[in-house]
Length: 429
Image (cartoon, rainbow, N blue to C red; front, side, top):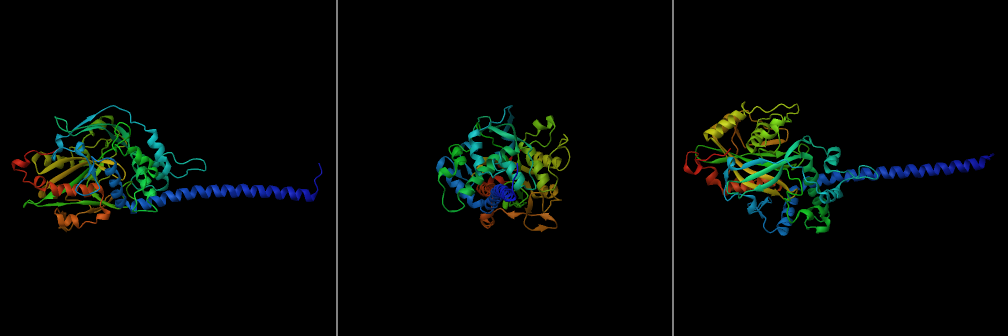
């Protein structure tokens, strides 16, 4: 068929126009995806900058929704009567048990969590918060390790508090906790001082009546330990960890207790998996990592932690001879991300602390150790008194740190009692 030059030019021009529209549309689509991703990163930055403010707002929201909850010592950390023993008790009094149970999958909560996720492509959002975070805002420490999931908690059992655990993975926590925090940050971006309506908080609304909801959502608790150094005259000092931005997945840019960590197995060894379901072992490993700078105990090759070697042997010996006492105060809820932390206080006699942590570091993989002035290289800590606690930067204090310090002041006479006195004859472990 003969096509004259004029027709050919017209056809060619039309084709060029169609291709131009197509590539312009593709460019716009690519720009929309990139804008969605950039917004996600910007929102996470805003979440970090307003972390404590958002914790306060989240606390108010949950106190209104569940009146049985209360603030711990005026902090944003929340608990209720069913989440604590009547008084501090030795950690050894808390029974820990294992239950073979698959993690629950709450599709309604997960669908609500996806609302704050950015576009992965033109047609699809990221499926999980951990996937978006790992791609777009990955911190230094970010690995989907096996973790112990809280199945049941009974703090009023006649035989002593009882915690039952099953299996879970760390990213289960990220997918829920970071999403519910992100949701509140986005909902308050334009009016930071106003509590948003429930329709703007679909995920949080699902969890408002019962933030634990252990039977329906994955709850991976951490152990938050306030470390006290008891001097010969019966005074105490404490230590904190500044969690540096970009290093950790949660609580960036805040002061937290040291040590603190997830209840996780330290090895992929099947035998170690059950043996490491132990709150004291969790605390010991965190001491080794956060105050002594040891690499995180992961045991990827199946290598188990040798608890007969220092510093574990030193810590166990101190616990046995009473120069270290470990107390449990219950568990609490961090309101912004609905994380659960088991609250403990470790009280070292000064000479024991100085021996165990003679090689204490100033920085670790998570941030900077806040230890007060060092005397001849020894960590002395910050004075445990109302003045020192009140002088801490309230806008940067994590809920566990703020709550634990208030509880420590409240129970100071018990915690810092003479180890040889009748009041302190039972040691924790």
